[in-house]
Length: 68
Image 1 (cartoon, one colour):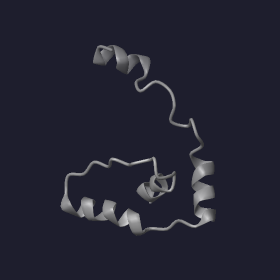
Image 2 (cartoon, rainbow, N blue to C red):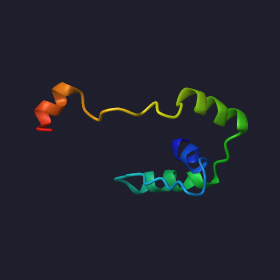
Image 3 (cartoon, rainbow, N blue to C red):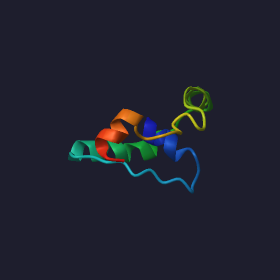
Image 4 (cartoon, one colour):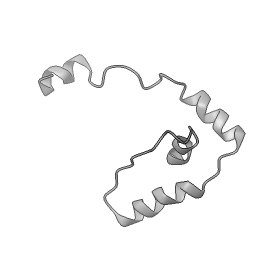
């Protein structure tokens, strides 16, 4: 579902999923055929608004530990 949502963002957005197993590849490819309804897209957009994932990658403690 997450990949289908990313694909719905427009033709200039290309998801690059990672995977270890063939079954995960098959699941990821299936996202191309998953059509989310406008209601589903609206609910996902509300749950994950633009900028929700913005910010530092590491907390200050982890950044010190990682040498950043």
